[in-house]
Image 1: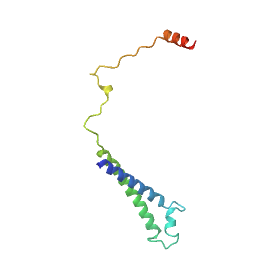
Image 2: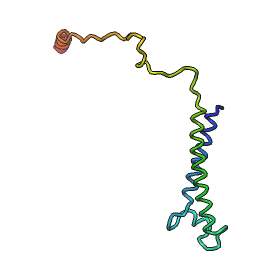
Image 3: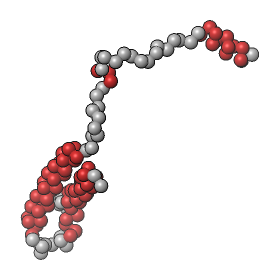
Image 4: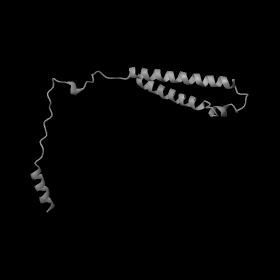
Amino acid sequence: MSTFTIFLALIVVVAFLLIVVIMVQNPKGGGLSSSFGGGGTQQLGGVKKTTDFLDKSTWYLATFLLILILASNIAINRGDSTLESKALDTDAPSTQPLQTPANTATDAATIKDSVN
């Protein structure tokens, strides 16, 4: 298992957790977080502490996701060869032969004969 594969798996897990944390947050009128505490004032930790925890965890997960994405770029196996454009190589002659246009009169006569 390569390092890039490990980073890719971690990115998927963190992205999923970030989606869950964002969906649980309480937008101005309600959301999934209101259904977890029963909607009353007797919530575990209080409403303010739950909101602070979700807000901080969103920022931590987003930062961790960004760090993982940048680190995965370093872990990509680029191989031994250098990838350079062949268009910039001025020393190599052009090896493609020029294509000659077909004789349109002969082609037209052939098509006419095959139709009759």
